[in-house]
Amino acid sequence: MRLLIVEDEPGIVGFLKEGLEEEFFAVDIASDGKTGLYLAMTNDYDLMIIDWMLPALSGIELCRQLRKSGNVSPILFLTARDTIEDVVFGLEAGANDYIKKPFEFEELLARIRVQLRDRSSSDDTLNAGSLTLNASTHQVFCNKNDITLTPKEFSLLEYLLRNKGKVCTRSRIIEHVWDIHFDSDTSVIDVYITFLRKKLEAAGCPCLIQTIRGIGYIIREPDIT
Ligand code: CA
Image (cartoon, rainbow, N blue to C red; front, side, top):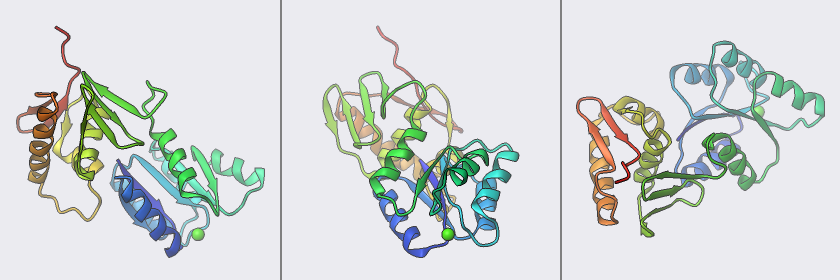
C-alpha cells in the first residue's frame, strides 16, 4: 500500500515516514500543498495524510481540490486545531478522518487501517483458499504453516490479495507497492513474484499467483474441488 504524506514539519515527516515504512507501507512526501496536489494528481495513492497548515496551499484547500477533481482516496488530516468547527470544516472539505497533534503513532496507524480495511471484512485479514494474510500483524499463514516474508514480498502479496479476482498490471503493482524513488524497471516484480511463489509453494499453497502473460498477475479464489 502506498501513502502520501503532505506535511511541512521535518520532525513529523521523519517520524511518520520511518514508522510507516516499518509497517511495510511505501511512502511519498510533499512538504507543501502545491507539491502535494501535484503528486496526488499524478499518482494513485491508497491513502493520504494531509496537514492542515501548509505552505503554498492549505491542507483544507488541497482536500477540496482533490475531491473536486474526482479523487476518492481516503484522506486523514492532521491538525493542531481542535475546535469542533475546525474538525467539521476539515471533514466537509473531503477528509475521511482527522487526528489531533500531538498524536501517538499507534493511534494514527489504527486510523489508517480502518480506512484501508476491505469493505467486505471487519478486520485486517485477507484470504484466498487456504492462504491468510493479516495486514496489521504482518502474519501470513497457509494451512496453518507460518510463512516468513520480506517487507516487499508481504506488500506485493497484500496488494494482489486486496485485488483478488482482478488482473494487477505491472504498472499498477509498481504504483501501489513501490515509492516514487523506484526506477521504472518492472522486471523486479517478476523476481519478487518468483520468491513469493517459492515460499507459498513450500508452505502448501502452490499455483495461487497466476501470470497473465504480457500484462501482470492475478490471485483467484481457488476452485473448491
Ligand atoms: Ca504544518
